Amino acid sequence: MIFEPATIGNIRLNNRIIRSATHEGLADEYGYPTDQLIKKYEMLARNEVGCIITGFAGVMPNGKSNSYRMLMIHDDTFIDPYKKLTGKIHEYGTPVILQIAHCGRQTRSKITGFPTVAPSAIRDRTFNEDLPHELSEPEIFEIIESFANAVVRAKDAGFDGVQLHLAHGYLLAQFLSSYTNRRTDRWGGTTANRFRIIGEIFARAKRMAGDFPVLVKMNAHDGRKGGMNITEAVEIAGMLESAGCSAIEVSCGVFEDSLYTVRGDTLPVEAAFRHNFRYKSYPGFVKSIAKRVVPILTKKIRPYENYNVQFAAMIRNMVSIPVITVGGISTLASVESIITGEKADFISMCRPFIIEPDIVRKFKEGRQAKSKCIACNYCLVAAEERALRCYRGKLKAQGS
Ligand SMILES: Cc1cc2nc3c(=O)[nH]c(=O)nc-3n(C[C@H](O)[C@H](O)[C@H](O)COP(=O)(O)O)c2cc1C
Image 1: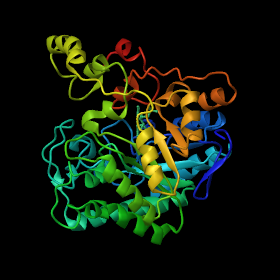
Image 2 (image 1 turned 30 degrees about the vertical axis):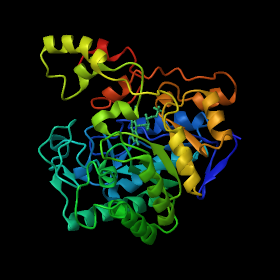
Image 3 (image 1 turned 180 degrees about the vertical axis):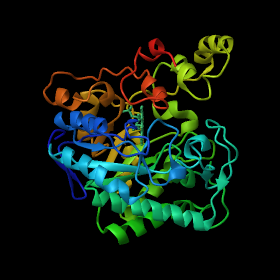
């Protein structure tokens, strides 16, 4: 069942194991896809991944990520370069879905060249910028239009679908969560109001791109006081289905606490001190004390494995569209129990594919039953400065 073809809307996947969106840092300086990116995807396609979801692509320049060399899709000049990418991946019979995003307050003006924007003027503790500019209604409509235009461009470029990034504290998640959305107009307050921007994107995209598949990645909960919780996430899933969503990928967390989203037993403190814009300027003695103290003081977020599965199952009970679960899935046994136990229709993985792009083939051929990834999370820390790869044991030697 796992290794048989299955569908999401009109997309035919090779099997039920998806490569979850993973920022690759392999765009050129303007956000166009490069040949190295295509090669990375070819490695996945050649090795029988069910479907590829790209790293997030920005729909507006003021929503560009702080991460190194993000993909963009904010005007029509992107269509042809993406056509080359989709054409190549389709040669392997593998579907490819473009994840589209706006970072909202989770970025830096230094990177985008614009003030950061958000539903409400609340500072993000990670990026520590000035207060973000609270979006006016005309600016919200501009964002809706930018997402819808990106959907049309993705369709024209030959992608099999798009995935709206509603998770991990980016702009659309900022609208959904009461933690970041304190508006008192029709874009804030009730769940329906906080969902409005997403409903409008679906409506506009349907008008402009017809039945082109639009998936989402959303948070089941965001770990913030007063923020998203599973009860509300289930309600939102129902709204998404009514809006015409093709599938829901279930994740959790925000950037302020990204090790909630991307969990592991060890904290990448050493790597963060070398490569994170906030910490690398700390004096040496502070770093060396902190290296010892932080792991003791920091509460580790558990569980480390399969941590969104129970929430995906609750969402799956609410909707009839396919549900994908991501987060700490690293063994064939887990994949089997999730799929045959009908907790989710598909599973997706990120970090296991970074270290082993051929993990699906290994699982399928019975050559390996567990990923080699130890969740050190150096890949995540490095994402700010360099292209994606497994950096386990490598960042320290290279220095900053
Ligand atoms: C280096 C790195 C880059 C990521 N980039 C994205 C991204 O562009 N979009 C997204 O939705 N999630 C992104 N994620 C989160 C993953 O898709 C996934 O939700 C998370 O890593 C948990 O899955 P895993 O345990 O299989 O790694 C990223 C994670 C890592 C480690």
